[in-house]
Length: 321
Image (cartoon, rainbow, N blue to C red; front, side, top):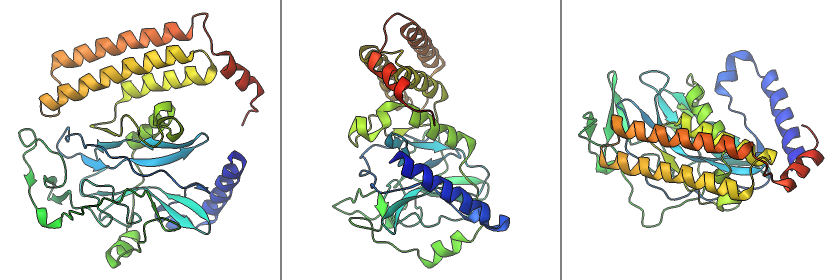
């Protein structure tokens, strides 16, 4: 599988080089594999943490170790007036092809996937730009109106299906049967901006956390959504992930560290829920203190005499790529 994935990436890279420079911004090439992504998990949307932030739904990405979940998160757009077209998996000639998300003046085609929270499969009904400010449709997205005041309610755009389709790919056996609308085709020819550096960092951090992989969570990630990109938490998870891969952390140490991180995350969620999506200065200090203690524990566990011998032996046998 890895050899096939590498060949596909090489082919797509050569193809991207051959595409004329003027049109590369409109081309969204990604990996292609033979196994479809898991179903979309069911999760609650955290409240918008700051006015002007837009919701970007979670999705299944793919790495050397299989599918991993990239949590949905509120992010700042690269500039005023832009909307997010979510990433999606499509079917093409026996392969599942990843189409990266992008920013643009209008929402384009995202495979007809029902990501929820305003992304029902076509367009986006969770809000709209009004001048230089984004107005949130609280019938579709989670916004604390005591913190964010630029809101409105439009329930006519919400489709209340009794059965929610959680299929995460478009086309092929069992996939969503969707074709681009005229408006989506028009949006595909507009100027696009790729995911911001914060979004890219968010995906990389998700990949570093073993708990996000479908092989670990069986399609049910423990943290399917976040209020904002959490760099500190992501760095901690990356350090744990590196310790597991290198064999410096034993399974027991890993479980203990993951539980500590999960408890901190749970406490933060509860505090934000009680305070309109924000943390007080005292709560932030407490979280920082807990993360500092966890950071020290990660260091101690990685540098003690305990190791995961099977993982280290596997690394010695694994060829460098």
